[in-house]
Length: 150
Image 1: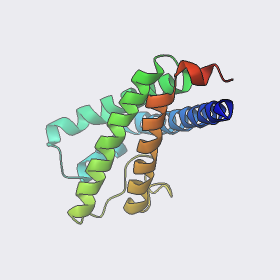
Image 2: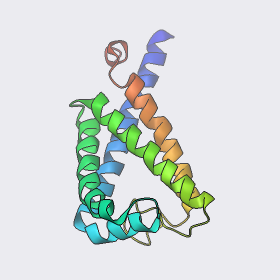
Image 3: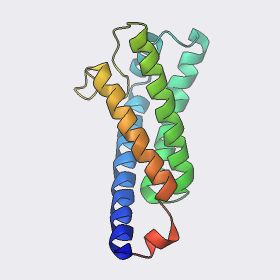
Image 4: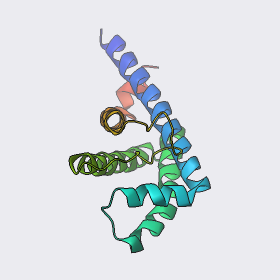
């Protein structure tokens, strides 16, 4: 029974790592290629001062890319998962505040007018699910007893 549980957790963690890594690498790639669109999406939240928006629009995608690659490759996987966990908490919080304030916005996670960002409630739900997955990957991603069950 214990072997089955360990293999199941290993499968969940590996799948979670691939999913989180791919999503964050994909999102970062769009943002790196379209910094002005991403800056406009950040500005739509009406949370940050204008002086910070461009800096965030240039820096955050690089951090997303590094964290996505880290989680996907397994190199400093827990550090990358912690970065993703932090970003998802920030994204979900910002999206929740925008929804509470009644702002009509797109998430800004992917390309403008993407079906993945079309409904802010769906984007918030997606972020919460990914946040839970990031917690699992961070907590159990490199436990020796799980890795040994392969």
